[in-house]
Image (cartoon, rainbow, N blue to C red):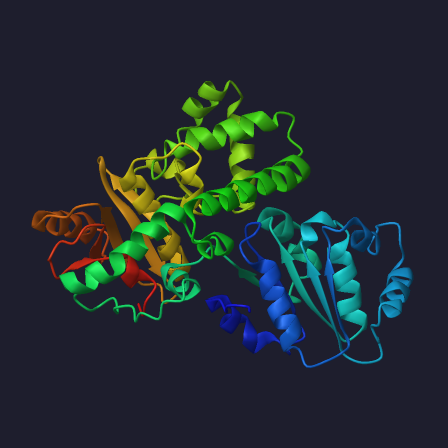
Length: 396
């Protein structure tokens, strides 16, 4: 049985539009499941599903083949081009010719494309011109906390963000919060009950990512350096990346570090958070690093628990809008959320909160014109203004 993700409902209104649906996200985050869900939802027999990790399927779209030969091959597989057809193509980053193929058949026939890929930098570069105005782009991330509960079969109602959480409610959610920020939100990991099986699944996901993304798509001369960089960054979760220092530790050039970071973020393994524009000039050049899923820390070098919790909070906040951090005169705010309504909200993340922490945060953001500021706490505080991770993925 397929468990619906929130993104499914966001895509549903565009099922019958002419534009292609393009879904990007990290490997094993659920993109294939999403495709299969919509494949079953389409009430038509004039459809086909192809996994482009399979070399035989990729050969259908070989760059040396003409569009006529591709059309003939698809007709042999049951596609009728005289009426509306649906083509579901999974993992398109392995097939460089796909953008031109999609453009041709989009322009000449009634073809609705559903496409997934795990390399955003690759897809955005290739599709920026060839499919301008011909696509809707969506991103699929690991489970937020609300989806995590759904996958666990728990039907708890999450407290709304404006609600005050009492200790009984906090205690109800804390065991799930603890599991979520330790094991993360990769769907297949969440569905496992045994810790050993969870870690085995996470190791397999990482191994698959490294083999099929880093070694195949990255084409780096020193793949071992990329692995060393990942280990190095686990010690710096939630911190600004000092490119010069990292380059020195890895014994590579600054340019190489920039390329590795660009690839790791472009394939959804890492997230690099920029500083808000009003930050110090020097600070604006540095980005803070977070991992796409906290579960990887279970076998990579584990950061301090406060950093892991901050990463888990980031994983939920990023689904609500654009994320920045702020620092001026050595005074920092962990996250500034710019919502889709262009409202700015400040968040500080702490394991334990005391009453003065909120006043300090408010003073720091006053000059930014930010009226809403909250602290997200791991431990129960009893303060009305303090919020908790499980409130972020509820109604906000």
